[in-house]
Length: 320
Image (tube, rainbow, N blue to C red; front, top):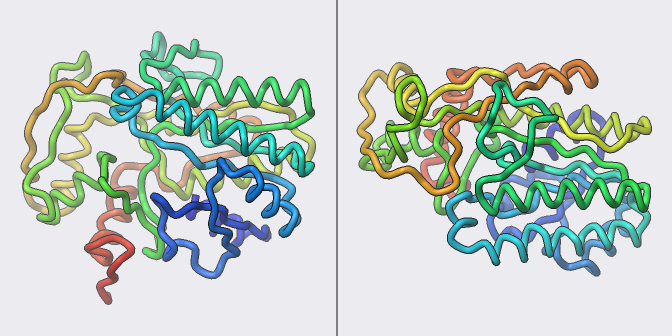
């Protein structure tokens, strides 16, 4: 969200960040307009829309842990769907009819063909993916009933950091593979856990399609322009059509830092698909999107630089 907000500001838009800061960081806002609030608070959403003349909503808000969603599906449905419905209601009442939704490759479940296209069957294997799919369907219904046009952007594996080193990835607890690998390489973790080495893949570890956050930000700008020009409700995959395994990501990091990375094996996590690789042909043809930063070495270099400069995340900065 912060990467996209700053990217939009750099390209002539006036974004207003609406965030509870429960999992976000005030330091990532910079000099952008900011309203603190929960996106499930319809009154606060309505006030923010009217106070700032909002014409479109880019909806990044959701909990996003596959494992946690399996453990507590009730929480995921109440938050990702319940709060989202209140937000959409407030938007409708305030006259906003353009929405860009952060959806997910998790809506597809186990692929039956690769790379995955937008018309691939959507059979999520976990409650997180199910909440994303249900919200896409809600947006489709709202489009037909209320004229609320939307673009659902199905991220594959978002990764990387701002190339200038200003914005980065800082979660507590951290559950994403790339920052976990980098922190282990930097000696901030004793070892990395690989969940399953018996998958039906080339080295037994999961295959994922990593896409740089700046490329995601560019896709949001293109989607916003598309809606502003009268585009109809649709969905796009955001990926590179080229997946790498967990073990390959470890080896790439070892090559960059020049040292081995300790790792151990744990059982597969419930709800994890073996392979997720996107076809992004549709958004490339229709909106002209082309990923510029999404090769694994560029992603890793940006993450390494940010985490070296921010050893405790946004709380501290080490001068370069």
